Length: 291
Image (cartoon, rainbow, N blue to C red; front, side, top):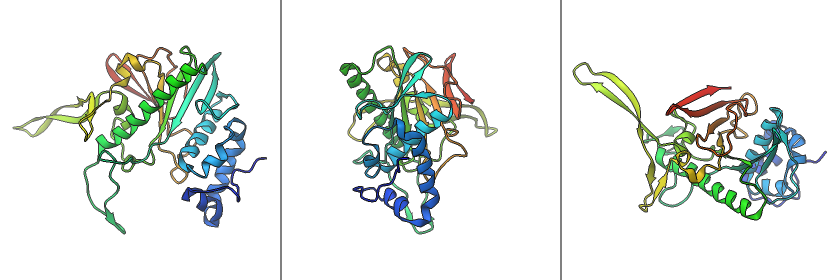
């Protein structure tokens, strides 16, 4: 059996080092080796070397694939490092998944880190718009990769295409709203608003404001309604997770959120991912179901 961690591997990622070398994290290393025993036949040739450089993004790819395999989906072994991260034989069709794990970003629109020191964390407003910008940035980048794959002939426009985003490395994102941030990244849901009876000081109505874009510090506008835009109808949906080696759910994939694209050219069944939560639009309303 192939061993995941290599003592002669060139390493730049600190998490890789501590999991490989620190005996306090034997449990985490054994867990990763157990994933690797399942995933190794399907990994691209560069996976082990890239894990040492980009630990969390590659962990996400392996975790995702193992969860899908455990669900009974037919993953296809990789023949090349080029192309989407996962290919599935799905009901006699090809389903491609492109995985990504954004971080806080850089520049004026970066998500600010946590304030305070030691055991004290200062209060701050949740930087929702910056977090959503990180998710939309990842989404649109992977859409551009899809166009490259189609141009190369690797992917057909008749294939199913899913983007899988892991948000763990984005600060503050673990405190989700009722509508997950990933849904607000591709559908135009803004802040929760409440209509009050001023005399009685009682709520009359609660609703989410319409937010079709977020404006960056530069003045550029970023759309948050890709799943209402026919230009992105090639995306069947988005899988979202915040799983991380030290933030694991009770079972593989039970943390997944799948957002269906209501205008997708290639529609997936609502429960094709049979774990976690699915979100879809029906009669102009957002619907939720835990699978």
